[in-house]
Length: 333
Picture 1 (cartoon, rainbow, N blue to C red):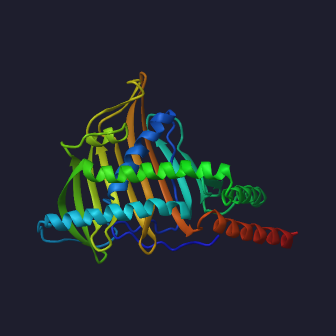
Picture 2: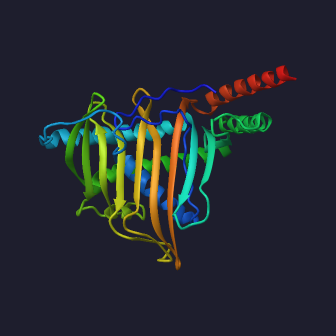
């Protein structure tokens, strides 16, 4: 499988062993499972790195960034985030997902590695080995053939496809709306400016805006979140966001609750010039479901991004791959 050599994030150099992406799915109920993702997606939509200081860091003199420049930087970051949001549907990647429960939980960590391929109205996830290669070539080829049929359908223009894509468009519009809303839901304060890997990075603190009025369940979470974001001043790209809950959040008519102190973070990598997509996403959260407490740490690492394009173009690539794998199997026989 062709790999895309992603650029280093100047704040986080990434893994040195070339291991594939990893990400985790919580073992809590579905609504609980989606909660941290909703917050992170909405906030990451507005801005994004604290992380490992793998690159040389120099703190620049603390000179206040003029308000006009700060506003312009945030405006560019929001515009780039909208572009990155739409670009996710055009890139395949390897995802390694893992869940680590609290130390007192006897359940072992769950780890899965998949090849995630956008398929028009969804994302196909094909199981692969820890190295990103198929563990069972025959079964993998069958999965590619099923994906080929899905892509062929998705590349069509019938009533069913138009209805399905209308739902996808609505979801994209909702995410774009959250990006715009998040940009005004917080008060942004420049914490520092740092020179890392030749890039000037603005570290910005965000706190709830007292004047903000939520208009939906998701936006009602914003006043309960604060944190930091790191923005590359030259590119206007969000490199990382780190946030935490500053209040408990009830879920499901108070039958469940996510506790204050829940933490989330996301780092990004440049997959092609001007396009930055998630490389590492982490959640540490605790709460209760009815009377049962829970605590979960989940992590997703994404790597080997490759532009695969819309369904029609992706179909061509997958058919070629199927043909190549069939020829390889025939040669072995």
